[in-house]
Image 1 (cartoon, rainbow, N blue to C red):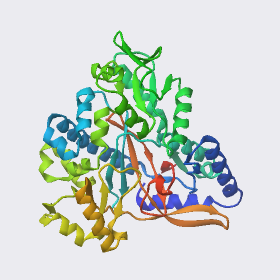
Image 2: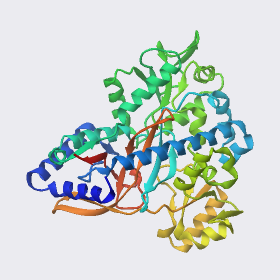
Image 3: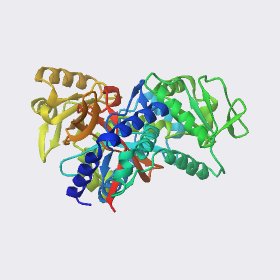
Image 4: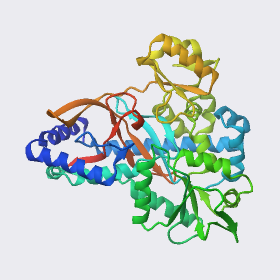
Length: 453
């Protein structure tokens, strides 16, 4: 389906939003999302009345790009495990070095990761960040189910075939696949460690409910003192543990502080008797925005196979660590600080380990004084500067107090990767602002692949 036909599908869908179809669609979406917990910090994440549409060809192109770029990320990580100076370049701290001895060389695939990006006016998906411990897949699953039950989608489906790529079921498939790699049959048993942070409470409840529905046994633990490692197996009380994970970054930090090298969890992970979901050391390396500087810097080109180098050039924006240096930009050598200062409209400044958009400065929305003050701060800390990824706003239908209206919205496109090698499902944020994070007030839309019947 060419681009103009996709626009025809959008126009046809929007034209169905009237009368009883509009009223019932909005009513059902509101009821379903509130009943199932599609919320963030207590507020509903439903706002727009149309999913984000892709054609089958676009889906295939984005899947291919995602998996090749993910290979590049894996190459950076493996090189970091071998090279201490490279780890320092990535910003790995002394306490994180200790984790490399625990599971840095583990070959257990990542259960789930997510690349976050925008589609440009040229149709190319460009990635700005990698999330090594993403949420959202349950929210997208439930939101897709909500849209599937609406009158507007029923009417739309008479003319178009509509598919919502799976998200939540993949977490179960990935856990089972890793369990089989350990030579164990059946379903793995999980421990969720730590308290939920204030922004994670809603999704924690969804996760626990979903695990129970799928027959996954788990325990929720907040103490470092309830573990034992005996007879080659890790236990919480009498509950055998295959997989350890954290509910939030609060829980992760608590585990790192409480579990020293002789702790049962640390010993079990080191011996391979259990594994930490997505890897302890891997989380530290891949959570840093400096990862994208490593993908973008020409001196690292030797780390990548030819097809990966080509994909990185196409799908990764120019990114550098903020420091006093000369670097390349557009085929020319430039003084990094003076160039970034003089051309703020081209760039974004990001803390290396920021979360939820905190601290991020968009140069095209900043004045010179604020930009240069942030640039000075970035020089004193660990920050990256990244070239702006252009994206067009799209018109979405919204039902407000005055009735149906169409509003321009930014949307991102964030593909999930399961067990490092399989891409299915997307996290899609919708926002009136170019800062897309849910912490900044954004909402969600499910992704639907459409083709005319």
